[in-house]
Length: 341
Image (cartoon, rainbow, N blue to C red; front, top):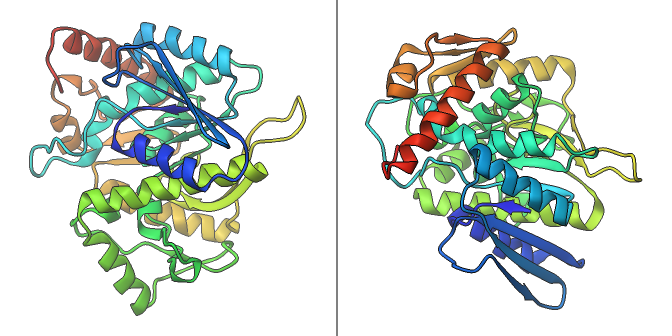
């Protein structure tokens, strides 16, 4: 199931339909522009169902998503939409972490619904997974991994041209942030990037946003196709637990009636510590950090949230839950009045 009908979601589904080599049913849900409640298209291998949902977060969204999961029982759910648009622009100098209030509601609603099931699907989030997945993990509603961002830096048609970058959303911008670590071929150790790797990263970062996002959506489609075919895959993905940026991870749909989907980080403990430290620095450049079970927002990030800013810039799980509940209710009130973030 793909939640969203925007550019990323549409390209992900298109790529998935192109490369998958096993029978597959893709349910895509969202508000979109269609008037019918459901449309079905099919070819030799892929059946595509479009399910229109008036809302994707809040009480109504929760009910709609619950009904869809009950009806279709997907093995994988991809969140590919939020109330934030990367194409709408924003105030210069505002840390990207200030977008949390718009990025979180849909993903959190999906996670809440999915975790009520006896066997939750494998959950993937493409909407600022570095921060959103960290928050969901703090709330004990974890996604297995994220999509996009780091994949944007790594994907290539030729495997021998891919760079194994432990990337972060911060590496896609033009800000001054330390270069990402690079994983060895076995994905279990990391090292500082070589000159040639730095050059390759710089060329990818210099691409227009639309082209970079297309790389991310294509890589996401390839990953889901691999999961559909074999039930497992290994990749460098952001948003695993509270790591923030990308780490090497093995994903599995599980097998057998009682088996659950799993995500296992492949790094040795000492390299995992290095990755956390590097990702923490990248996160700080976007106005937030995670340490010892608490999320801390910079003063600039909190200011950038405006009316949706929490009362404290340091939040534990209970504080996050209370803030998220208030913020989602406020956001839906704003949208109901025809205003936009």
